[in-house]
Amino acid sequence: MVEYEAVIGLEVHAQLKTRSKIFCGCPTTFGADANENVCPVCLGMPGVLPVLNKRAVEHGIKCGIALNCSIAETTKFDRKNYFYPDLPKGYQISQYDQPICSNGHLTIDGRKIRILRAHLEEDAGKLVHAGADGLHGSDYSKPDFNRAGVPLLEIVSEPDIRDAEHARRYLTELRTILRYLDVCDGDLEKGNFRCDANVSVRPFGQEELGTKAEIKNLNSFSAVERAIKFEIDRQTALVRSGQKVKQETRLWDENSGKTHSMRSKEGARDYRYFPEPDLVPLHIDRQWVASIEKTMPELPEARRERLIKDTGLPNEIAVVVVERQELATFFDEVLALGAQPGTARAFLDQALACYNKNTGYTITESIVTAQNIKDIVCSLDSGEINTGTAKTLMTELMESSSVGDAEAVDIPTVIKQRGLAQMSNEDELRSMISAVIAANPKQVEEFKAGKQKVREFFLGQVMKQTKGKANPKILNQVLDEELAK
Image 1 (cartoon, rainbow, N blue to C red):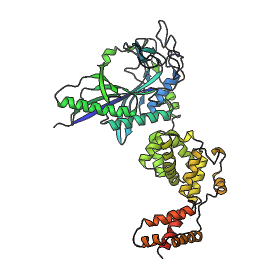
Image 2 (cartoon, one colour):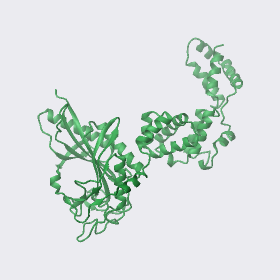
Image 3 (cartoon, rainbow, N blue to C red):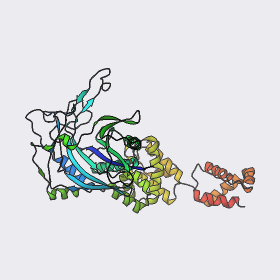
Image 4 (cartoon, rainbow, N blue to C red):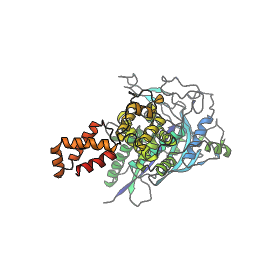
């Protein structure tokens, strides 16, 4: 049986974080009433002229640098003609043959994914369909043009992706980069980070590409992954049965878990591109690019490598920490205050990450400060408190409970006032252990008979008497000595 491989390319539309639209002064505020943020320019009224937003260009250049692209010395805008109800002008101002960024790449899990281009364009509006937004029972759709004219950067990958999981990792990394650059919120639910997937299949070893289908309506990374998997299976079944795959645009249906045909897929010729007559070509000065490059933050890949090298953070944990920029920044602040990397890493991973997973909070949404964490970690490292006490303090801080306002809390003082320091006096612990052993002769006999689990009973009894404050290292050492008698 012939084996087939998938060939996947992704087109990402990232809304750029500017206060005004790309060709007019209308605000880009999300959530405004329908058709509130519009003007004659973004509505395409006769006689109006577009004016290019400089900040949108800066964001585009910044993204291009981060994606290892070549930044064009001269770029221009073009008219892309198509007639949809949510496109008020009847054409979209985009970029065709001279995009602002080209020939870049991202490396994901050791595999390079080439980026063909990243170009600037204006977003279209959207349609609110019957059954939504108060249109229950109606038989029409309502156009909302607030989104029309919002600046977009369309990032087009080469067909270098071979499976759905890798596609998801690429999108996750791309969104993380855009968030680090502070040029896009990356919120799929709000539509400011959208993805279309081009999927085809071909026999293994064949160079020629198969016929592709474009999948739209992907509003989550999970949807992207599942839609691609479904489409690979659908196309593979077609070619194995001797049928042909149609070049078309398909919609992902979240409820059925399937893609459905929407329309035939247009090609560049169908869009009848021609240079936008109302915008002159843009010449990008190299000094401007250099000045933007100087403002670049440490990017996710470099941050992961640094954390792994400096702290011994496992790669899989580094990926999770760095993806959440606020947690990575917080971690850096804790280390800068003097906490030992190993303990800080383990503590944040086991305590903070677990707590955040259970509650949905991020560290920046709590009242916990980097100084709080540093003090807890240092107290743990010095042996003043044990792991259980450290986790208890952390939980109380996250929940704003009895320790009060974290900004005003001095952890060493709290430890002293509440008697939280662990018991490390060997003689005192030996006396307690001897008493527990003497009070439980039956369990001693079971232990000496080979039931090793009984040892946990003795540990529990001593911890109960010390209210969890016994030094685990000393406790275990003395307990073994006493049980060996």
